[in-house]
Length: 76
Figure 1 (cartoon, rainbow, N blue to C red):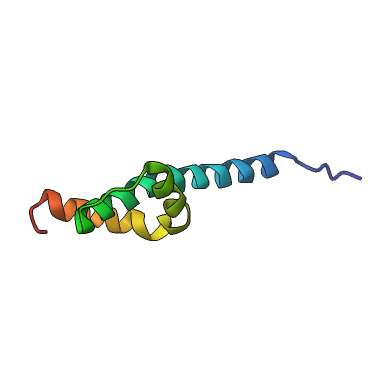
Figure 2 (spheres, one colour):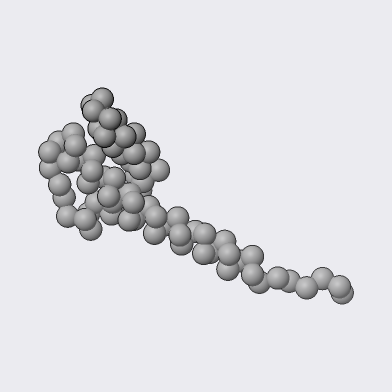
């Protein structure tokens, strides 16, 4: 009787999920292209890099960040 359903929690979780997907598409696509350019000296169109980054972004983003930092400090 005193319970009222709050609809804002569903919208918030949907927004967070959407932000994670957009992050994986954009930053994951950048990281896939960066790693391909760094290790294989090749680049692919960003659309295909974004598709790969959507699924491999959790791995490729940290690896690309570490490689970029090592490259900036001339370790690699």
